[in-house]
Length: 543
Figure: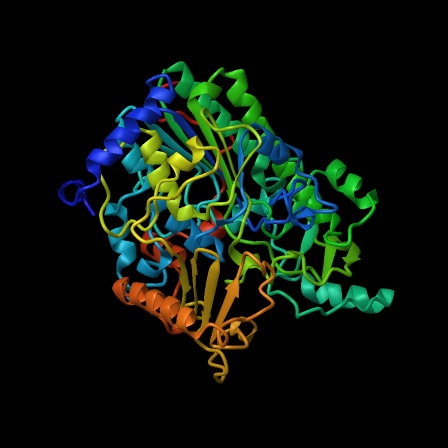
């Protein structure tokens, strides 16, 4: 959508938005606030060292340490019922950027949306509509079907994907051949690893690096950008997208040795993963420190969340040398890594979409807890209300602002066009949909009971429709669909009405993903060839 078309679609809530925007600016000394958005990768709800729900002791790890994220809970607000827009990274990132449900783009029937996306509304574009002085920069992982500059970023690390997080000693570390070596290693050493629920397509491997997953360098670049913006007295939006904790497992050697000798937990026990999470957490702490060092904490909001739930299990992981030789392996007795949540990444059970979500900033009560369900779709409206945006949104914006919740110690409602949270995937993924309304959640497995068609049978589900009461059954073990047919039918109708309105694809089609489509259009294999500049280079005329 171009700017002229966008301005024509201003909705009737403009006056309401203007009033609340004025309040937001008043609480921020009258200046548009700085906004820092930190997105972690594949970090499960329980892969933290604080209780994601203060009333649930099992909602924290018994092995992983994230002291800086725990610090953020003390300084700000934790959300117990926060959701990624999707159960995989790329659709989540698109949905956050556009404020749109993935059913409208990645999983929509329109195959030409990638060509239209450069003209769509995005977080940076709306912030600049609120105040042209805003500067926007992206650091780390991108993995979207639109170029960063077309999305409104002034500076970016480029159209990066997972591979840029798997760089060691300045080169791409290709571990694709390790599976064969692992079989040989297991035979030689008499190891029979647990199969659990099958092997993932990408074997969990660990190797050490002084800049694990780029966490150190991306934080340094982000710090340079923020320092420059503060010196120039310009409000900024800094999007820091970590490659961690996505596979491969990478950390500083010292961090790994610490967890290698630490007593293993019953919930989590992989030293490579724990070390990677700790190094990432340290980088998050450096951002928290920088905000205070620059003296901008009274006008800066920091949002921290994961792009989807954690992977379900690591059956066996291998530690590698720089030449990909296996030096040791780690076997686990942990069957499900996201307990008490069910399953994990790729699925719409809570383990796949409920994620850590923290906010620190002015007007937010320290050590506060919010139980109001929120989603990454809500970030665009929330950021822009904080920035003083007052022009309303087009109808395809699915999120809503939760500024009032932030201001009211976690109580209140999110102003969305629809009350329910809706999740959907299809096309190149196994078709699954879900809807949460109040405490009830319905999951629809489109392929349950059907013959295979090349899609992954692991995610087909046992029943076509399931209904759960999350207030009493967070582990989603009791299906209520047959006991509560009226509610089941009502939620199913509401879900289907949205999917029809959004023109969502509901079949498995094996189509290309958006990032691959963009790579083909641009004629460059970003996945393997792009290296990230080691330093921040100002696009604003500074040396």
